[in-house]
Image (cartoon, rainbow, N blue to C red; front, side):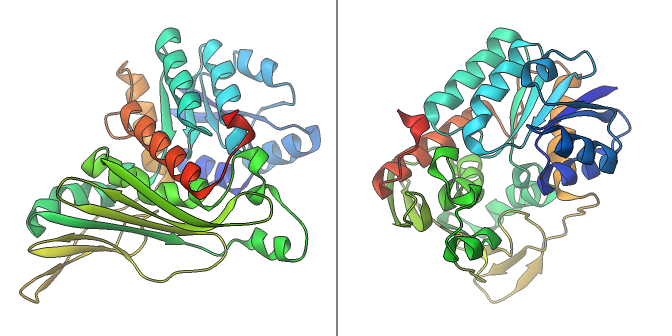
Length: 327
């Protein structure tokens, strides 16, 4: 039985606990929050036995074997390293770190401590993404990848009224690229590897984070375009365009309901058999990697996380977004 500790008390951590309910050998046991009130409320709601407001005590706890981190982006590095140095495996929410340097340090610590560190990118662990990988050769030579994730943030409404919430604070390493653009970039890296060139542009808000942007990634024989926004919606799907057809992906963050449209005009729905909640699959991957004493995930491999962190850091540099964590 893997005893799972939770860092964070937001809706994402609630979804992770719901996903864990479908695994007999994973038991959420404890939660860390900065305030006792939030910790107690979260523990009562989700049936957790232990609460912590001291991060070191949480990391040292014998009631925890592994940790799921869903705190603000800027906190991932320090929290993950503290947990790993106390022998805890870590499933860390995307983006795994503020920048490439932090990500490198995190994976180096995992190797030194002999623990597992995986970036919690749910989409690439889902059956739908596996189906994309199985079907991609059917569309011929791929020429363009389009990753589109633009979603108006409920916190932007508060921003327009003069209240700056965490989602738009550069000291927390936030912004549209970090929070939403990663959903387009990470699958691209898994599918096609590291591109030769990055060109990025974006719209900066007064707080210094990007509200929206577009990144163009150049490969030798193809290109990839990733659009992201937290200040408007987009309804166009994502797409992998090949010489013989295209794979249409309605939601790049949760790949399901895909269709192949062939050049001859025929269409074919891709059956995905997505049985469990989306976050189940990343947790299952995490559990299996630990169970079989593997160094890391094959799907969400350290290399994929490091390349993604490198690309996003370069995109931020071109957009003019700098975080305190970069200094």
